Length: 220
Image 1 (tube, rainbow, N blue to C red):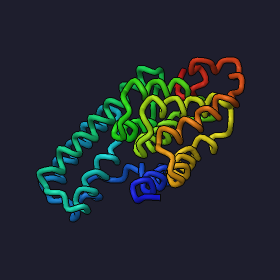
Image 2 (tube, rainbow, N blue to C red):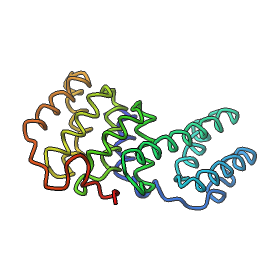
Image 3 (cartoon, one colour):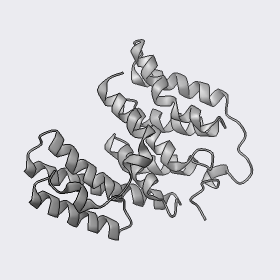
Image 4 (cartoon, rainbow, N blue to C red):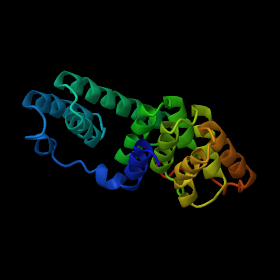
């Protein structure tokens, strides 16, 4: 498993811990140049006022410092994350996921950064249900996209896994299954296609009230 995929899987496993908001100023103090820290804090205030999570902004700033990114490039990267969170939140609202919650917005932002579109976010969110939460589905989709699975196949595979009626653990295991197939020489698209066919073959009837996303726990 390459380092990028390993990080993605770790982020999925530790999502709740990584999403802890904490105090922005305290997290940045002594670790980020003061002007950058002040600018990130201001962006965090703006994000909070718009109902967006702030932890990803802090994480991006700290990541830049750890990687030795020049200070003048850190703030634009943080702004990009803010834009992705804003777009994810809008896509979730458009899909009827209200309130979305920080975990779903963060997962949506991650999926957008991995190459999915707001339309993809909405399609996945509408398929989510109480047994397969929106945040989990979007985390899985982001991981698959980061591995190189094409957008359409990523969406189809995640939706097929949800509609199969299988446990959420099967959904979460998809990136690992794709990675295993890739290790055997299969291209990402082919690996995902095989899993999507298997999911489609085992689709279970949707319980009453869960068609077209009505089972989404965020929906009123």
